Length: 492
Image (cartoon, rainbow, N blue to C red; front, side, top):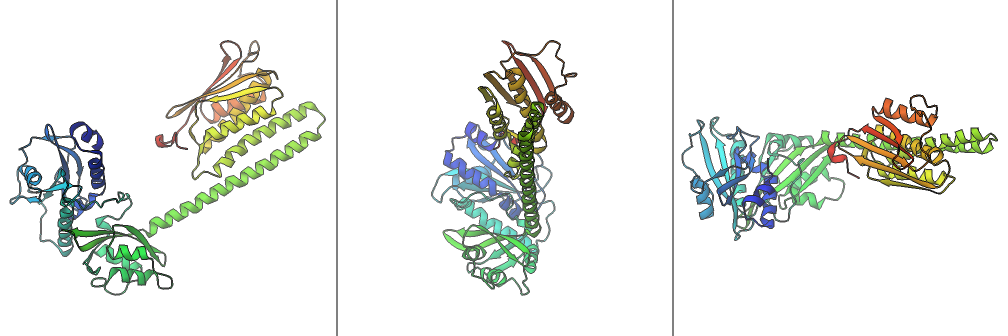
């Protein structure tokens, strides 16, 4: 399905500023749909007539449109209410319900503009399903009055608010809790959910009739300076969000000033109890810090083991024993590099390019000859469970290429990497003497190659091929399945 930006660019002549305004409106118009108990469709004029570029269904009532209408066109005179709202620049309401679909539907249209005297951008069609109509409660009447005020602000170009970033997905919704304030910041209506949230903060008096800013400050800032930002939000003077906390209860507030004809008539304050959400976030932060501390300590312990092995190697007089201990030092060091990286990452994901470069550098530093090691391509993000064995595999293959492929002589070794969505392809190529006659990795006794085969095939369920390189030398080809979310593959 084409995006809003695609539809606007292809079928309309809206400017970039108009498009940004439309994006801001659509990001926040769930509020209008829920207060109205109605479906919303945004129509933009196009050469073919009118095109629907966005649609929103209410969470507070039954929908009218079970199918998506985004991308559909209507002729210029097919929807008289849309034409009237566009030409007369006012909100239009239909008298009698429309029964053409078998369900009574009340239609209204709201012109959309960026500023009071600015040109119109489009028209919102507001369709209310009246099939479950009944005598409205106080809550429903407050919702509808608030929706009427908000629609007028849209028609005057005052909502969404100029220069205000679109609200986050986790912002309070209408059903979480709603407070209606008058011009002085006093509560004229409190929904049951909003009242419950304030009861959890410790309120025992009646919320209706109180000054919300003062009441909230008295609850949460008895023994410390009052947060001025809280006072502005809780009094409904600025379109902003804040959180208040008392006794372990955390409540999120979002203020929406109601400005009609240039004057502030009051405000809506959406209220949401986010106590459990914040508790879980704190637990995750604590868990994350603990995991990173464990990785840090494992890295330190591995470095200590490597230092002890290096010390033991220096005391040995047998060359074969010293070489074996040096290989063990390199293997332990490659694992320590992974844990050092994990100790600095917020998740169990690793930006592996840095690790690969350090392994390459470590191999070059211990080589007895002048060897040029280069990497081409990027590993991207790897899970920790995959990063550790791949680091060991890379260490073994590079060391094998330098010691046995080049046989201690100067030369070049290249690491080529190609990352796909769920697969990592890696090639280690050297310009050395090539494979010995009758080489078979299944029966080869080289410990490093056996470690590589065990990790790649046995642990990572990958594929390993070793073959002569065209032009001389050896080429090791690995294909390893990697399961990482698509949006994390190239995130650093």
